Image 1 (spheres, one colour):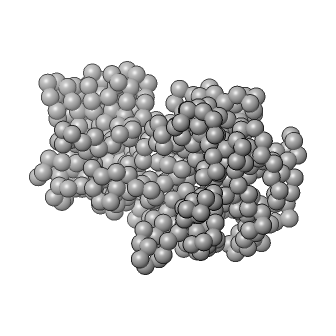
Image 2 (cartoon, helix red, strand yellow):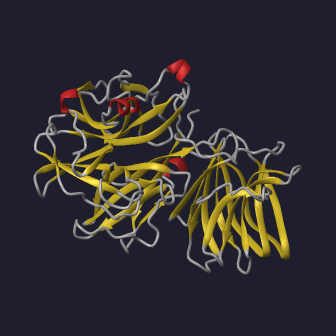
Image 3 (cartoon, helix red, strand yellow):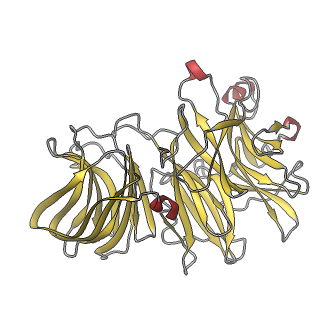
Length: 461
């Protein structure tokens, strides 16, 4: 059975480049083999396709790595634009740290074309670099190309850094224009807020007359965020300007003409919760929608929900209570893939939530915890015993302060979990349990009462 959270057979995936084409999503991605001794250095572009985010085609290489002395030893992020004549144009980052020793740019924008979206021919003569008078030469990447009908020009957004500005916060979204997809003119930056080291993996789309700029940053909260514009010039921030937490990065969007989805990856931690997050991991997909106040929300794609057809357990109502401490209740054991939905009401409680991969014997697991007084839902080890370790910084989302009742959907597969709250907010994470099996799931409440209703647990077969 296919996994919900796609990962290539070798290594991990990172930085998906989605394109909806001929009734399916083509998902180009970077493959990190994580084994130079076997696979050599560098990162190619791979391709998998899906129509439902449940079944994925076997990955295949579409843009190979260059040699150690070539610009594109690492074929890094970019975009694929399909022209009116059916030609696929891939604009990607040629990244090679070895070139810096020669005083050459580490990164450049490169171009490749294809007739079928699978077999690309590189056009090295189209490579171009950051203008040295305005931009730092080693940050010039992640090209996002689209056609602007107002100007009649192709536009390219790039993750770049200005030469002038605060030492760390010189990141900008660079803008280039072209008439033919070959020669590009560097314009004034689209957005330069003096806020981040750089704005990785830019993405741009319009919904109901509102422009949205997507970017990922690693110098503040390390997550995928967005800004919106009503005039195409001034980019505004929503109260909640992100799609997920720390464990969801480098996400880009694509639409099937009806709904829009955002494709990111959830990083690994080398088998231990207390270690740092690694670059690359597994695919995570959210459906994106626009709210009345122009902010963006996310929810679980319906096709993923519908893939869980076998109801394993259901609980019409559960009450657990402890006014002066903590009370928990185990509901079942965890393994494979699992979907859970229900409603939680922790009125009066300081904290309540969902226990996952919990070992009764070792009193250790994980908790999606709701804290109404703080307006927060977070994921962490539970109980979190190491006093000097903060396991999951920024693996949290803000909720309306004082709100105590929530609907939720939870997706679990192997060591990955994603929680959706009120079909508005997503929070992804990964777990490396140390307790002894069997691992269980359940509910907990602290200093109050928790009422859970309409709980349903489903499997895929």
